Image (cartoon, rainbow, N blue to C red; front, top):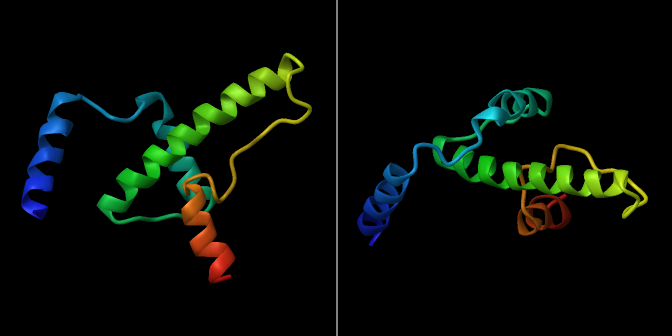
Length: 95
């Protein structure tokens, strides 16, 4: 089963030149350095996808805040590479 998943992922990855926004590469490196993050290769892939989605969400929110739709701005923090279940398990359950 794992072999099938592996080859499926290889096929998907080969269809796309890059799954990541290259313009965000320096910001990703800065994020990891600032918050002392390091990952295995597989984990980095997952965390980068989560982080990029959060960046897009933050930028959209802040543009809306500039237009008066929100009363606050958002920013990047040490949790920006985690999804909600990841935050819950890592920090709320195990402190």
